[in-house]
Length: 198
Ligand SMILES: [Zn+2]
Image (cartoon, rainbow, N blue to C red; front, side, top):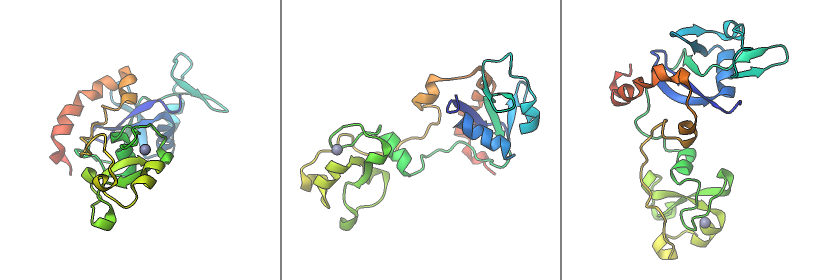
C-alpha cells in the first residue's frame, strides 16, 4: 500500500509526476505538498488526517489513527512542467534497457548492472544516450576496454535517447485512480506547452 502511486501536481494543478504513498505522506508531513480532494480542495497534513478514512478502503493505520490515502497531492514549491526529455542518469538508462544486459540479454537487478560505454571512455567515447548500455559484470569483464566490434560482442538494442513519458510506466498504467481523472486531461496540454514554464 505504501508503494502504490499518488499523482503529483504542480501549483497550477498540472500533473508533473507520480510518487509513492510513502513519499506523498512525507511531503505532506513536511509541508511541501498538500493533499487534493474533490473540487480542488487542498488539505495540509493536520486537516487531512482529520478526514475520516473509516468508510474508505484506501487508508493507512498509524499508531493513533486511520488516515485516508491522498491519491492526488499538489506541491507548493515546485512549478516544473512535465519534462520533455529524459534525464540522463542511471535509473533512466536502466529503465530504457528494461533491466537487461544489452550483450547477453539476461535480466538483472539494478545493483547487478553496470553502465557500459560502447566506445570506451579511454578511446574518447562520450557519456551520451547513444554510447551507453546496461551491462552485467561478466559481459563487462569480457568486453574490457574495447568497442563491441573489437570484443566481437553484439549490442541487442542499439542505444537511443528515450522519450520521457511519466504515464508510460507499466506500473502506472496498471493502476489508475478515479481521483486522477480531473487532472489527467491536462497532461497533453502541459506536455506540448513546456514553454509556459516561468
Ligand atoms: Zn551480460
